[in-house]
Amino acid sequence: MPIMNDQELNAIVLNDLNDIVDEVIKRIYDRDNQTTSNISLLDELQDVVYNAGTPQFYNRQPFAESLAGSFDKEKTVTIGQEIVGEIFQDYSRMSNKPDEYVHGSHTKKFPPDVREFIAQMVIEGSSGPLFGTSGFWLDKRDFWSPIEDLVNNGGLDKFIEEAFNKRGIIWKKF
Image 1 (cartoon, rainbow, N blue to C red):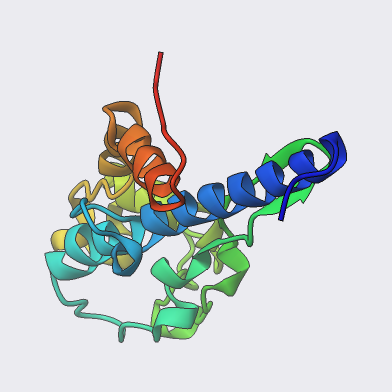
Image 2: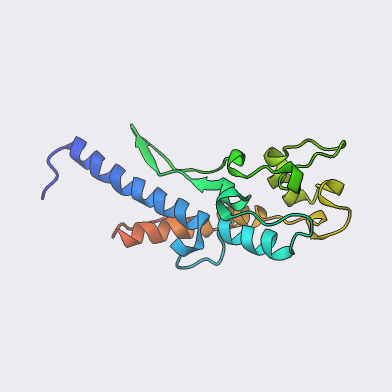
C-alpha cells in the first residue's frame, strides 16, 4: 500500500520508532527480551543483590514486594513527535514490615520505613547497623553501574541497531 502523504509517512515512522524504543527499554530491563547482552536490570539485581547472601533476621519478600519488584518499565508512548520509554522505581511497591526488619525497623536509631533509601543503601553498602552489625548487607552491591556501563559503552547503540535491523531499517550511527 503506497504512502499517500506526509501525515501517513509520519504515522508509520513514529509507530516503528515507538516499537524500537519499547524493545530497547525491555532489553535493558529484563534479559528475557535480549539476544546479545548478558546484562539487564533484573539480572543485576538478582546476581549482585540477592545472590550475595541470605538474610538472617528477616525473610526475603516475594518479587512484587521486593527491591527488584519496585523497578518496572512503562509502555512506550508517542506524544506528538516525542517518544517516551522509561524504567522507573516505585519504592512504595516494596513491603514495609518494621516488626520483621523488612525495609525498616522500630529501633530508636532508624525510621520504621526506609524503602525510599533501600536502593541507595544497597548500592553504597550504607545500611550501617540497621539490619545487623555484620553480614553481606554491609557490602556495596552496586547493581546500577553495569546498566550505566551498558548504556554508555555501546550496548544501547547495539540494541537500537538490532531493533532497527529487525524491522528492515538500515541503522547508521554518525
